[in-house]
Amino acid sequence: MFLAIRELKHGKLRFSMIGLITVLIAWLVFILSGLGNGLSTLSAATFKNMNAHYVTFEEGSRASMSRSLLSESLVKELENQTNVTAASAMGATMGTVFKSASADKVKVDVALLGITPGSFLEPSVIEGKPLQADKPLEVIVNDTLKKKGFKIGDTLEIEGSLEKVKIVGFVTNETYNHLPAIFTTLDKWRSIQFAAPGSDKGIEKPVNAIMLQGENIDPEKLNKHFKNTETVTKAAAIQGMPGYKEENGTIMMMLAFLLAISAFVIGVFFYVLTLQKSNQFGILKAIGASNRFLGKAIVSQVFLLSSISIVVGILLTYGTALILPDEMPFSLDTKLVVVYALLLLVVSILSSLISVRKITKIDPLQAIGRME
Image 1 (tube, helix red, strand yellow):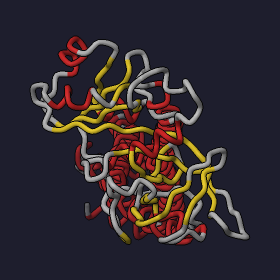
Image 2 (cartoon, rainbow, N blue to C red):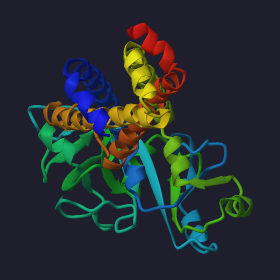
Image 3 (cartoon, rainbow, N blue to C red):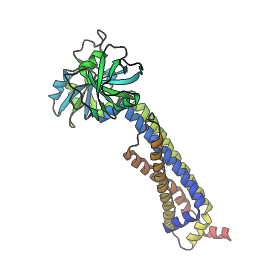
Image 4 (tube, helix red, strand yellow):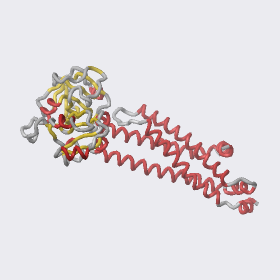
């Protein structure tokens, strides 16, 4: 470690250049991970937040709310199954709302979600009051609508429908399919979604899915017991969200390529430095320095330089997050920061092993001859 620190102090310029490259790579990795996490949060925050373990869909829907249609009567039957502690139905549809009787009819795309008031699917309100079963005209909405001028007490009209609803509360971090969520009762949701005659396919009290609580539920047993249904884990239901898997796959591929490129760049930098110092390493070996000692010096250099650069990259990322506009879906998870920081550090150390291998092949006698 002493040799590593001494050389870092001696070669400030070249090591600063390597550090700057590592900082930029780390900064880019964290920015991309934050944007990817933000996109996935926008896409499925409501599903991620709900306190459920499994979801029951219509058979053949491929775990997609938009392709599934079930009867709400299944809720009682599912609650009576082994290991199911609670069940609650949910419906989802996309729509456009605007303020009623307002001169400025700003239209906003939203996700209208039907739930049972007081169930485990209802999010906690941060302002106002929760849903009430005897007041179907009242809704609670995501707080992002505040920035668009909506407030408690506003009456909303739904474009293409005669239905009207009133905002009575705000919730936070509730988005569905990249849109702010509006929670209403299942009856009100059905009156909006199935306004056209026959659109409910003759199903009594139709819903899109039924959420289940119970960690030890056997989905295969439920699928055999209930015809025309498929029960999947909540994680599988999240993957079934429109575009969720494709968005995450794209971001993960970009991060994988970035980590591979960073390994190559850092490895080349230290390999070139090792080539430039091959004579010095040869002299050190001639006076008794072992390959292990020199290898530890190289790895220590990379560890110190990478650690400092990664920390600087993290600080720059959090600084960037403060100035990003609200429209940017940026959400940096602390666990993700730790994981990617460790990945970058491991990649850097592994790339330094190329230089360590080069050291073992240096012949001290040849190095002395070149020096003479």
